[in-house]
Amino acid sequence: MTERKPPDVSWESWIERQILDGQRDGAFHDLPGVGRPIDDLDEPRDEFWWVKAKLRREEVVYTPPTIAIRSDRDATLAAALEAPTEVEVRKSIAALNARIAQVNRRASVGPPSTVAPLDVDSIVDRWRNGRPQTDPTIPEMPQDSAGTEPRRRFRLGRRRRSAQRT
Image (cartoon, rainbow, N blue to C red; front, top):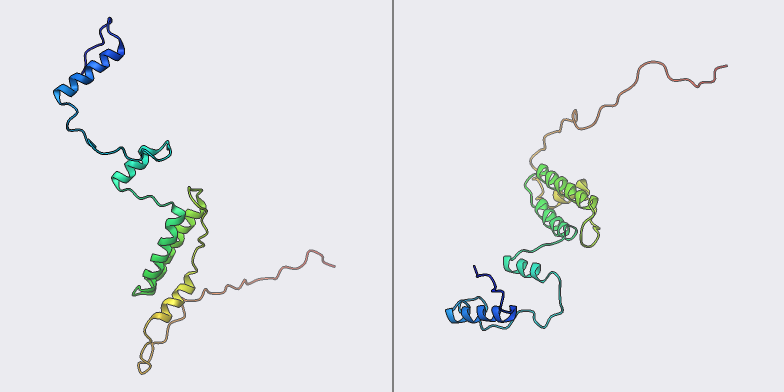
């Protein structure tokens, strides 16, 4: 820590004396960037130059969510079409649709989101068409339709009659 400025010395001479003492003691010999030109000296002034430099140093890449969801959609769709089971296809597309809905729901930085949720059934159809065909010599097992369709409920009792009775 430096000593206090004496009252009878001006600020300029006191600071100059400290700089000269530091140069004589070698305090400025091992500073980073010695002998190199100052970066971005000719560029226009930017208030956030230090933030951008920090992000470059830390190798941080930030993509706005509305752009990231587009690449995420393409990657998830490609992975879903290569999935081994229909259940996995449906799970991955449902998870993607939830992320798309979240991005569309939030106001965010960057361009507006133009990504719509994907139709799960059409992607499952594409997945089925891309699968190898089954051997026609092997008979397929009949599927039980008991749990596939919702049951229709019939209301027993009187029908409602109009309010006007004669």
